[in-house]
Image 1: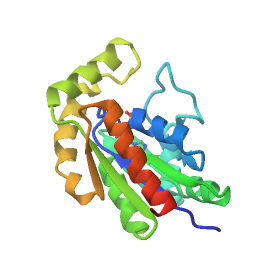
Image 2 (image 1 turned 60 degrees about the vertical axis):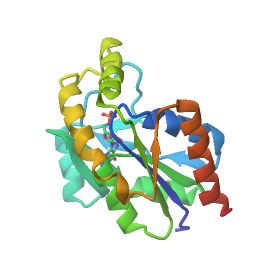
Image 3 (image 1 turned 180 degrees about the horizontal axis):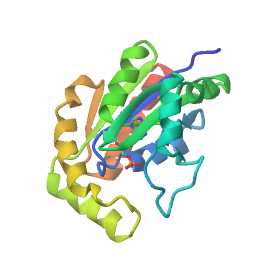
Length: 194
Ligand code: 5GP
């Protein structure tokens, strides 16, 4: 199997990670999004096999038992998320680099497993109120049917911020277009070795 590179985007839910990941994917055709498995409910704007592989808890657990995950976490109570080993090998086999949008612990886990060919970026928001606003908007649009999560997500954000310094780069997302530019620059240097 050919070994490519991996770019790990982590940061609190609502930090703008997903928007930045879409931006990077459209800018770099050699990047491919790693589709994770999750046991959470599908949102209205999501598709199985595109945003996530949505699995019942029983099949997620069976995959854990069969050691099929490169990493997995119970990101929120009773909600599991994980990266399949075969997702990684599939992307590298297609001669592409991998883009991950995963939680902080999963991101650091992958960085540890692939220290020489990974780039880890932490997306940070400096205001918990701003984060709350973004999460509420998602909730009002009825995009998040697990909306029990807002307070859980905010508490988790505080915890996640404390891991920021363990990442290769921290981007404070105050102005989205500037954050996108910085992310493009960092990724370009990493991929093309400038
Ligand atoms: P959401 O429910 O908003 O899609 O994602 C919740 C959190 O789970 C986000 O921080 C997201 O990056 C993270 N996540 C998504 N996929 C994975 C994965 O495969 N592994 C881990 N550890 N976290 C993931």
